[in-house]
Length: 195
Image 1 (cartoon, one colour):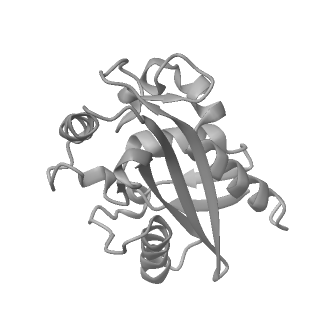
Image 2 (cartoon, one colour):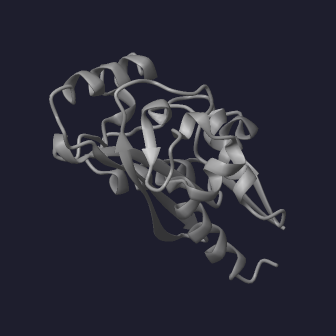
């Protein structure tokens, strides 16, 4: 069995990714390392932030690990909020405030196209790799649903009529940006000689 650390304090993300990985991979969160501090995220790209977080944990603990960064990229806003998605409305990191700001900025826009993009940075035995997952869709003008987190209540994925927040987790997991990046990660890990 391969034990790997997911460099996150977010229990929702840990639960989502744990559900997507095969049983042969033991996923542990930062709490299992007794690490509760913030990890720096100072880069201006999703790739940069994911690598920065993974390198921080790898250098501090010397463990195989991965980190992710996810952004909502909205066409009409030239790709914003992007790398600033989690703190779009300010440092309070409040999902409702972030959604309210985004909806306000899109009030007069007919173009509602958007995509969620997840970048996973893996460091295993000192080697660094990146995996990229995208879910295309559109932003609606009101919040719908109680599942998920972040911008899920205002994002309808392409080909569906419900928001990510209206979908049960197993359904969302089959089509999400995080699933696509995690599937690439899992496929790569399963191809290694750990099993």
